[in-house]
Image 1 (cartoon, rainbow, N blue to C red):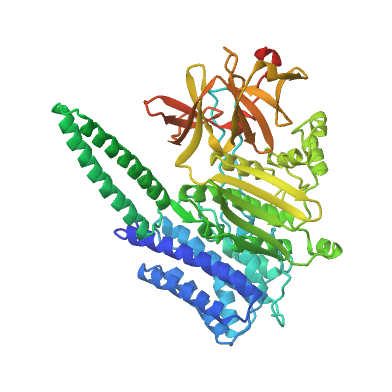
Image 2 (tube, helix red, strand yellow):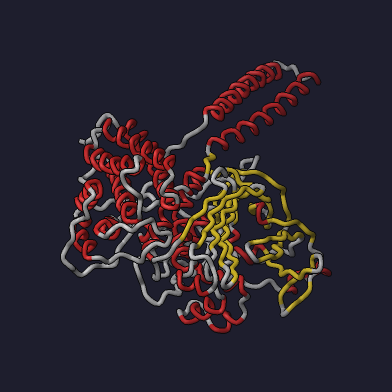
Length: 628
């Protein structure tokens, strides 16, 4: 029987509230490290920890109460001026908050948390008593592992480029490791006069070696101190005002339904005069408006501030930067931007990869920054902004930048592309090579990076959200990773087109305009069909060639499609019009090039094209002779 039988709802409420509180505490701790004398911050951190302890006590989670209480005592001494915050004390506190988050993972499995790492508890007691943490005999130490160093792995993918091939499954999940071994060891060092603004290099002290066996004794959990969770959170917080709006609209629709029922009864009794027809028309129009408003209101209940996701990452960046001996500050911008809750869950892994990549690869070392005349502290901006019907997320660093020639050479060296192809790539295309499976510029594999299984997972997961990722970089100045996503996954604006009698849907976000295709306008360039549109020469690709169908007729219309840095004309037989559709995934099968399916007003099934995937599949080039 579960340790919390009959308390499941209460336990879930506690985990939801306490996880947010702990993330907030972690962020405030990162801020406190920059302003150690800020009493207001200390009080807020103390109150957050006290609230977590109170909830844990109500659930009789004794071990969590114990470590929360001891850490609370540290905060109390700090805010009362009995202790001065320095790097060693902060490391012990961070280790304690990491263990509390591990305990959350055990609670989520409806079992009592196991005892906290004795080394962490001993280090806290030593700090409280004013004594140094116990020393230990030297021992061989494995490289320290922090929550930020959890390596995301991915399964391999394979598949032929045809309609029946299934999408490869690329799933990343962080491993769970305790961090006491590398963080608490600093408690055995004499505290410095003041908190240092430049973090020390990775810790491999004798004390860390002695603590390693203790941390290994703690049972591994699927969710530890890393921000990504093994299981998705299926709950959502909704403002009551939004729910009230949904209920009010539902009531109004009920009234309109009653009105329609009355009109229907009259018509069934033979009353078909012009007044009845007018009433029917007005009522249907009113229903159309109300359903649209209800759809919009229901969508807003799914929207959540992206700050709830962003707040997990300052701790991640801080831990990894300290491990690598770098001084990095993660700046959050646009936390109030709202995005679909389901997308927030799926964005976690890609953002973890990108932030780790920025700290490890993007940010230069203190020595490099000093030589280049840069500030020793590196800034990484994580921002979100709504632009039209899209959400744009950017990760911007001020590091060394990405040299496209090195990227091309590495891709050739690893056999990912041939030298001839590499010579034809411009800078933007070269930067996109880092998303190829197996690509890595690291010569040695570490617990941070080097296996080449990260960035390809990022792009795959972003594409699953109907989004795209672009890179711009300036050598010596830094890089920008820009993610563009639809506002929501529930409703997708599309352009309906036809190929023969078969309708297809193209995401409207990729459509620039619709143009007629006249044979006289088609030109032959190297045997391939092209057209000049406002002094821009664009290639023509028929929809039939993209999906592997046989060309049955000469297309009459062209749709200007923009996908990333690629712009081309997709030739179709005709188009139906624009529509907002509810996209449904295809059960059990996921053919390449198809994002899902939807229904038209007459009940016909329409396949929604996944243009990003279609453009990566090998197809025959459209010849100009097709339009002759």
